[in-house]
Image (cartoon, rainbow, N blue to C red; front, side, top):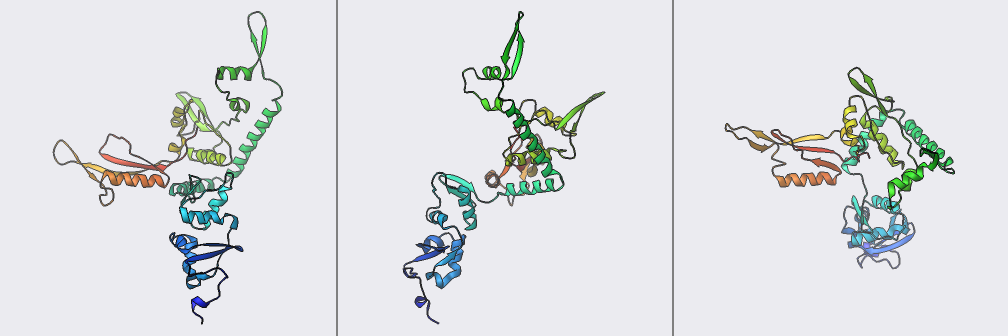
Length: 345
């Protein structure tokens, strides 16, 4: 067998000069092999290792040659710059294919290639919720259809003003309701036409019912939305489909009071009630016979200082979790870890 140095090589492609050639669907790209091997966990580096002594021959890569230069830019500079209007999703897909790191900088902006730990937990939680919701897809489609019908109805009435009749004590005065609404809201400021022009479609999710001692609350359609977690999954799905949602005065069975107290014109914090956080006890107080207690870390082999705790919380935050140290008047130090779900607005 001929030694590696005498094996067939593509003309002009020499292993001895420290370069490697990639054949990307028929287009050849020549690059220093050390530029590739400096990123050992990536696909091209693995291919280069697998080829071994055959590195003098072009390495075939089944990828888009038009975007391959951007991949090589990352190998050299650790970031990419692409023209304005370039399809970023396609570049991110290539980056995942070439096993680039989880975060990638493109045009000075950072993109996440793979779901964070929290996103994986959210996806798993959503999957469990929807698996026990057989009419979920049908319910979402029906809501969107009603939204569409509502906007079409608004559009059909857009050719004529919405009139209001006032009485000044002597005669009727006719005005235009939406024009007056804008005047009242603006007073010289930039006109927020969108909210007035495109009225939202409102869905009643729950209602209050009176009994002799006050009110009790029930979901309007408990076969679909019957808990805050289902409500959050519904709103998240609508958001994915480009539908902007909001809430006000939402009521439920046992969760009614909590939500009702938080609504009434203020921002609705559905996420905390829907997905309860996991609590970890970090430290506890111990009595030693005198007036004052002393505190000890619960797991000093891991969290044994405030600096370690800070590093732990920073790492959890990187992975998409929300961390809080609540102020509770008891003998324990707790860490609350929850999904950083987007609050309803």
